[in-house]
Image (tube, rainbow, N blue to C red; front, side, top):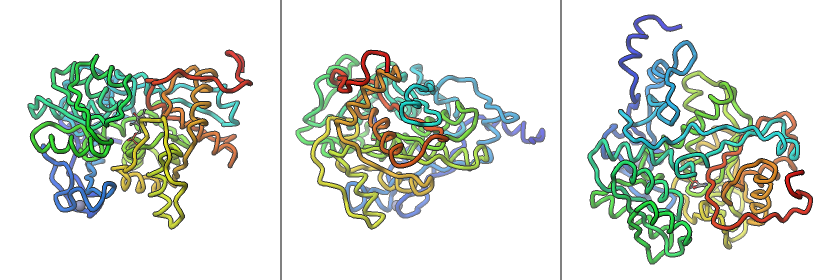
Amino acid sequence: MENNEHRHQVIEAHRSCVVDLRCLRCGQVVPYGEDAYLCPVCGTGTGPSDAGILDVRYDYELAARALFDDGRLRSDRDDIFRYLPLLPVEEPRTDLRAGWTPLVEAPRLAAALGVGSLYLKDETRNPSRALKDRATAVGVNRALAQGRTDICCASAGNAAISLAAFAANAGLRAHAFVPHDASEIRLEWLDALGADVIRSEGDYDQAYDEAEAMRAAGWYSRNCAFNPFLVEGKKTCGLEITEQLDWRVPDVVISPVGDACTLSGIGKGFRDLQRMGRIDRLPRLVGVQAAGEPAMLNLYLEQQGRPPVAEPGDTAAASIDVAHPRNARRLLNELEASDGELLAVEDAEMRSAQSRLARIGGTIAELASASTLAALHHLSERESLAAARVVLVVTGGRTDEPITNDEPNTKGNER
Ligand SMILES: *Cc1c(COP(=O)(O)O)cnc(C)c1O
Ligand SMILES: [Zn+2]
């Protein structure tokens, strides 16, 4: 397949194959450089879900040659930099290893739900116990390459804890802008990891603006939606799922949705593989929101000319409690490309799914992550999944409250 000339090129090209960046809002092309952030034309846009977010573009032909040798992946790294040519990092320097988490089969859960085969992508096995580490690893490496000393983010929990962990190990100062109602347990984690915590007087939106202001003052930003490079880290989850399935495409991939970086990133991973000719179709992406905060779902319904779901109330699923999803446009694009959809589940459904994931799947998921199993329940009631290969992305494993078993029929470990 490859001639020698190509092989020669490959050795030299075993590095990032980024070409440039392009605005998802207006199409403006921006050169690949240190300071690429939001689109210079669109800026933050006209509303909180309307920013000119840049998408990193690659030379996929070059990347395919750099990544694969006779169809096999060249790299044997066991972290996200396994896919270095498809990442905006030249030389990884961090020691904590994000990614290459196990894809665990869950036959008992599959049987209980009538699903052909069911896999849990166990992101709780990342250094800080959440998928966020994938984005953090990219951000911290870029910050180190640029000689930065301070790195910040706005977060109600996992993003900040992830940043604190990677910054601690790499010797950067981490600054976490947290909303006024951040959970005490998560603040304790930040404290334990030595982060500088800046508690906003306002909500997550206000904390986000405060972090953005410090970016302007010289701190590196780990705000995943706006910093165009971070979602590239998250896409490795989609790359891994496919590689771990021996390059077979799952039928459905289900992930919780807050700001919309996670699922849109995973979707990009699959599309990268399609562009390189490694797969010939895309999995259906299913995003899950909390019924108590269905902001992204409402944007999706609005795009389809459908009425919004009920007014937001409240949710205990803090990681997806986002009133203004900042990467909405990216996710809408990915849902369209994959024929995907969004749906909402109640907190009570998440709690019962959390208990089932533990009792029948042996996996401790945080509440937001358990939404994926609740959503699968909805899907399986609506359509037959008897022949489907389904992946639930268990995005995080740090529980803020005890897991309660409210299902009388799932006694003990038996059923
Ligand atoms: C951040 C997070 C999500 C949602 O990701 P978004 O990019 O905000 O959509 C889901 N689950 C967990 C555990 C998270 O930390
Ligand atoms: Zn633009």
